[in-house]
Image (tube, rainbow, N blue to C red; front, top):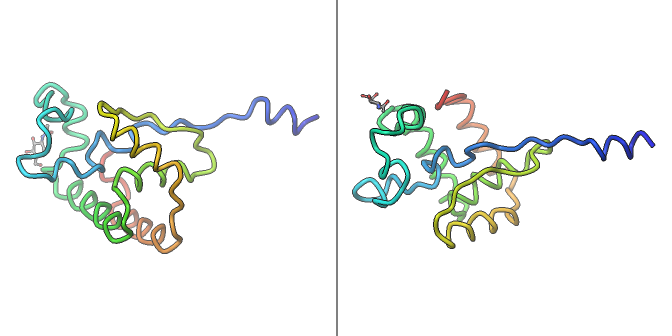
Length: 137
Ligand SMILES: *[C@@H]1O[C@H](CO)[C@@H](O)[C@H](O)[C@H]1NC(C)=O
């Protein structure tokens, strides 16, 4: 009965901004700073909290982001899949909040739900995390 009650009232965490406002997708590293319709481009100068938190002009934020993108590339994953799959693998996380304006973006997210991250990949993520424990406070 207690197990039943526990399951009935089980609380899961909802991961907020698992793509760090899109910077972990790698799109802002494309030529010309990424797609013109990307959030940080459309609302440039009008999104002060997000722009300062996920500011790729900040050396630490940029370095951490590049290292995570490199890990995705090395293991043949789309960076979106890597970020979403990493967050979802945490046992307390029940779901993630994300924004998708195009169907292929939604597909990336759905694909991420099926990705199994190799222990060597997790080890590399943990190394980057030790180097940059909180790049976007
Ligand atoms: C982003 O970082 C650069 C370099 O540190 C700084 O000059 C700029 O003001 C920051 N932009 C925002 C929106 O915080």
